[in-house]
Amino acid sequence: MAASLAAKAEDRGTSQTIRAQLALRELLMAGDIRPGERLSELAIVEKIGVSRTPVRAALMTLAEEGLLDAIPSGGYAARGFTEREVLDAIEVRGTLEGLAARLAAERGAGTIALQSMRESLKRLDDAVAAIAEGQDAFEAYIEHNAAFHRAIARMADNAALDRQMERAVALPFASPNAFVKTQGETPETRRVLLVAQEQHRSVFEAIERREGSRAEALMREHSRVAARNFAQTVRSRAALDRVPGGALIRLASE
Image (cartoon, rainbow, N blue to C red; front, side, top):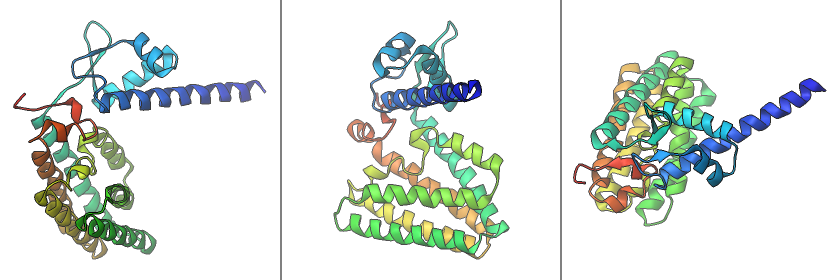
């Protein structure tokens, strides 16, 4: 009985910590906490309704993810990112995903895994076609795009790489879906969306044919789509603020 109660208490503590992490991350992503702003534990406790212990754990986790800076005198401040740092984060993610694609090809993906990826491609085709026709299918695209990228990570079957990839996409603007919602705003960005889908198909073919070097090169090139979308997005602060975490990015013109 005592062990059961202890386990329940631990579960509640874990749940509160996760709740604090999600709530605090949302505040950062929405720009409610500005870059350089010092975070008060007490203010956060009052704002999100959890105790100080899970808040403290959440602050440490978000600092490890790179969203907060530890202050030498104690506490944390919201981190701001330069345009160069965003591009560097995208480059790192692309390098890791390229390695994952090469391993997936060289180790040989199973029939079920390949069929699942083929289905993701079909759903992405449908979403891209709908967007090209002016329909709002971005949420569907984001869902299936994330599934496609996760499938490559699973096919690589490398736990160490998987952990590093999770860290790489912890910064929201470095994830594969970071700038998707801004892609339908101009003819240029819609064209980039079509290019990205062709790259998805080429990566799949390379993995299926066990062409490791080609799969890696294609996946690294694919990450540069996000860099181009970012370059388009930073032309407007209003557009950037619609990107998750965009409020944390400092533009060169500001």
